[in-house]
Length: 440
Image (cartoon, rainbow, N blue to C red; front, side):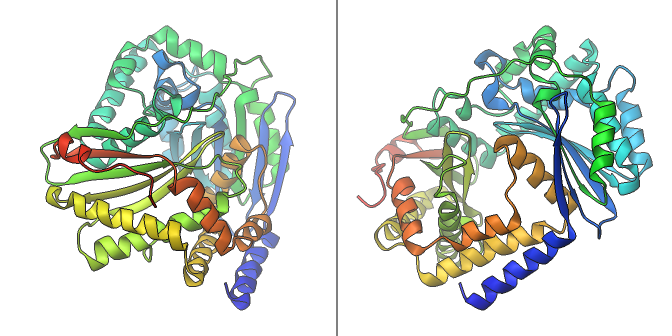
């Protein structure tokens, strides 16, 4: 990357960082509070991040974290679901929640002068949710419809197959929302017991960003959240090295949806930034090799991309494309050719320059939004236990060299791969392909 552009990006990030201030406090109850003041903002975004996700569930309770995500906004001991919705609408705010493999988050964004209301509502539903029988049964049907919707979305379904293949018989391979069987069998006592055992101040990170004062957030959290109590923890065990090479789901649809998967890197792996560069060059951006070759040059797909995910002890790199069934072999051949080229020749200096510019620019642009800053704080503190400064993250990107990308390509792309396909493709036609490590 040119020295002038590096300096410009670093200067821009430093200017943003100088105007903001990140502070953190751990309360006696166990709640960790982290805030970032944005003097230029008019809004505030606050989220409660719970350090429990889909991989922390017993197999028979698969989907219970996602079930709770739906249920908590159904009401508390003092507020109905309508009361909560009206309170947020009355100030022009919004509320949302999402479940991931290793955490669950509950978020509200509103004008900064109403931050106290946001903290009060989140504390209410997370400390004393009603979890009424009628609400559980009603929401069970909503979640089953959500699962049916995902089942009818081939792009979602093929990624589920890919993760099941990359992490067979491991919690990381399960669908985050569970299956229809587990959702239907979850009892009301199961859900309440899981909440009581896993949700409490010691599992909470409260993150806030916007036009706020740290001490005021701490005071509000201390007032609204309950005292410390013992919580159950789950020992996370890493997946073994076994993958399932092929998974297919035959569907009478117009396209074949294809995902190639590789085991990636754990979250704290020192090659993490080099993998981000590799992913961008491969299929993570508009200028990526796969998009330019498969879509722009050959016209074989509308959607084609690569993505990576990192967890506490494992990771994944996936490549996705959707194409006419008769062109699957051609698409897979082109993907193989690009993987082979990456392994044999690496990436170019210009590709490194473009990827670093993209990663740095995306990081800085994300600092303009209170929601993005809140997510960065909450997610990092929950899964890492600390938050990197912007300068630290930029330095890690700047340190990536061509040899580092070549090394991470050998670590990831030369390993076992999986192939998942949803569509009108006979399994025998896919078995006829040699599923081999790239570069052989």
